[in-house]
Amino acid sequence: MVQLCDHQTNPGTGIEPASSSSTSEPNAYAPEIISSVFNSRDIPLFQGTVREDETVVHLEPQLFARDNDTVGSARLICRYEIVSNIKKIPFVIEVKNRETGEGLLKVHEGERLSYEKRKTYKFNIFAFDCVDPPYDKKSSRAVVTVKVVAADRSAPVFEKTTYNADLQEGVLSQNITQVKAIDRDAAAENSAICGYDIVSDEAPFTITSNGIIKNTKAIYHKDAYNYILKIRARDCAGKVSEPAYVNIIVKETCTNGWTDFPDHIEYTPGSEYKYLTDSARLHVCAGSCVIDRVSVRVNLATNHIGKGCDRDTYSILSQRKLCGASDESVDLLPTATLASNWTNVVPSDDGNDGDRIFAFDGKSHHVVVPDAYTDHHLDSHFTISTWMKHSGHDDLVTKDTKPHHHGNKEHLLCMSDGD
Image: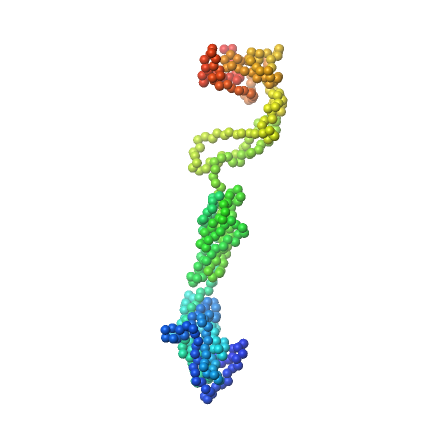
């Protein structure tokens, strides 16, 4: 049997100590413990909870007792007694107010509760009036059940400190990746993870209570290559984890095509040839095709105000000068003169010098450039420049000739003997 007897006034109650009673002091009634809850045998019941790291038990309903005596010490409640078959009950009841019989159930000084060792206690309690023993009277018993609540000692811990995930650009994903935290507390109410939070500023992502990360809007590789999210987990008791970090890589949609090809090139006349690019790369998506060969067509346009070639308004000689043609260039079809008359045999228009157009019928029209006009022995590297319009084969048919069939040799310039 465990007892507590308090004959001193609790500070702050304003109740003076009761004077010693005598055998002549009336004590007609025993105290009565007050409760709004009873069992089937009309015994008052109390339910208490206390966290293992606390010292005060929270009772429902609150503990009060009364005595129907109206005078002397018999009308006051002086102490409560705890009775149990358990050898050691780690609780005491402190009387807070003798007039109302208010009692406070506490963990005994020096005792420490352990959720792992014992989760519930059940015991009887009795109230005593303030008449000195053995003339004091005690109440009928009430039953108290105390539930020990585990303390939330551990904060959640993520299974990994860093996570990596891919997000295809332009896609609203419902499950980019899932993070998971655990809590090592023994009690289920403390070890359960109640939520996750993204603490990164203005990130277009959200996270569910199960740790699944989603994006809230479509994201494109050109706007952001990746996002690094800072995530925290919360257990149901309110403890917050150390952060974990999620690196989300925005994957660019694969398209076949050239990359690193310049869209603007500066060219200075007379600077000879110039590479259009030396870093262009052809990107072919996996599975789109098997490359057998690659051919390239490049369209070049000037920035001239008319969006065309401004050289078209100049004469041939002016064009050569503007384009930086070599001074050693030789016109093989000059306007006929007394000194250079080999072009007389070919029909021509009435163009200006250097702009004249000659027509070759593909049968008999040809010109022979004299040896004296230019050296016929060309080096291994030379350039031939011409403006030419080639007629179709049907245009070469006359009433006196047969059509030229595909495969006949045609020459712009050749070196041959007289045969």
